[in-house]
Length: 65
Image (tube, rainbow, N blue to C red; front, side, top):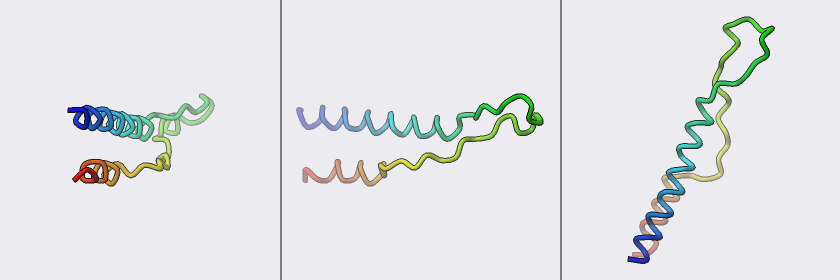
């Protein structure tokens, strides 16, 4: 049960990181008004996240076995 709880907490933290990545990826960037309107919104560049989510999850799931 303790391991399961740890897994849930770990999974939640990974999931939250993932959500944050998506949010950062699609967050419109503020550009000052003087730019033409087509430059007003564009996606921010992808943040270089150090965590490889799939690998992290795989390691976590199978390291106990």
